[in-house]
Image 1 (cartoon, rainbow, N blue to C red):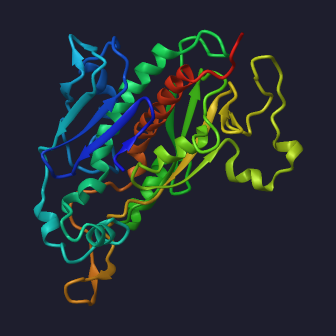
Image 2: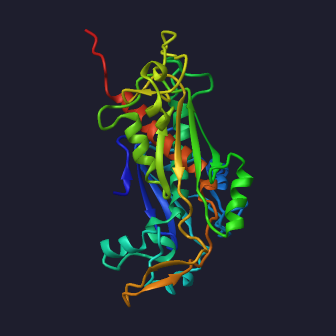
Image 3: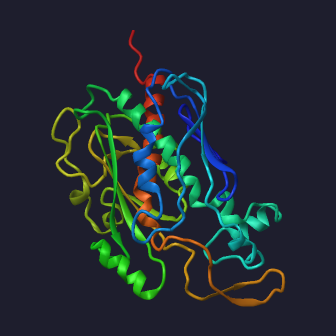
Length: 344
């Protein structure tokens, strides 16, 4: 439900227009240095209003530590971090209560929860909650550095997780893609790529907890994600096997090519982990659309009001890094706990 992970376990909480959103992390080892300043870079990257095409809603997003941290160090107890919501305009949503927004969770949430859901700003379904994921990602990235092995093909400097925006609206020129949406007075989607270096061989627990399975599970928890591909991805369907196979070149498992994207058989192979995600156009668009009025039963013309992102993909890279780091930190801890070979 709202929890994910085996040993590094995260629990997300809050609503878009509630008092706060937050994260509770169980299983983080004691002794990891951690203070508020460690979160500022990534929370700033996630914010709207700081770049063209993002929502004007601004929150300070200063982490409030409630448990698990003492003297700027993790204690081994569950870590609870809250982020206050201080810049809300809930009235924008009261007016449209009977008219579920196309592309949003309004209708399905209303049916599933019997009308008791917090509908303001999308409630618990809102992208606002990704600030909590980013916070968990900050801790996971620090943990990955602490857990980085010196052998197993790891690169100097430890495990690095870096995501970047590849294109908007089919355009590799980001400004050009964004301008397409501005000219159309509409929202637009994009593609984000994540690259992880320094991973050891052997991460992943096939079948159901394979590395791709867990990464995909976590990725689809990010609102607005519509697809994922590893390595060559869907292009592999048009390739010959001899062309797609990655020739192994040394004892560390390095390969001449990386069509697999760093994972074979659900297990990391020591090469760069590479995958891409498709981010849909922001559902909240100023374009006039049609939707059902569930009070009257009529189909009505409708335009979304409020403050929204023109292209949510602009803010996704740091969130993608976060969920990736969460999965990998959990896999690293799991690999240390489960012996694969018994020596006598």
